[in-house]
Length: 99
Image 1: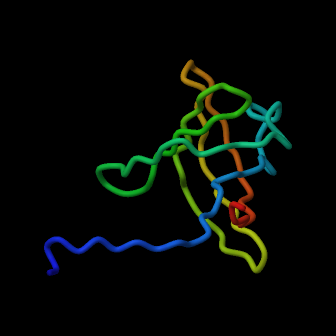
Image 2: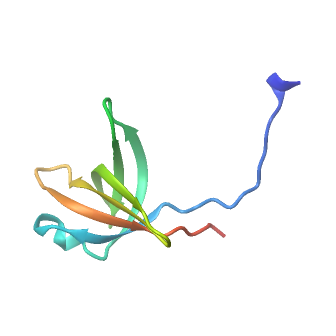
């Protein structure tokens, strides 16, 4: 019966791994670093805030735009290190299924 039905699906899941491919002067020390996504939060009006980990340090990304290109996705936004440092950043996401 529908209220007690459990749907199970075995599918390949994608890893949420990114690489820093663009920065401004404030965030240039992160260029080429690997980034993992830990959480996402919907902003009240519009947009997303994403909690990221870069080398065991938490950052907060205020996502501004996303470009879907033929072989990867670019995410652009403002990155904060939780102190008083904020800079622009571009992250590249290339889909990879978990094995």
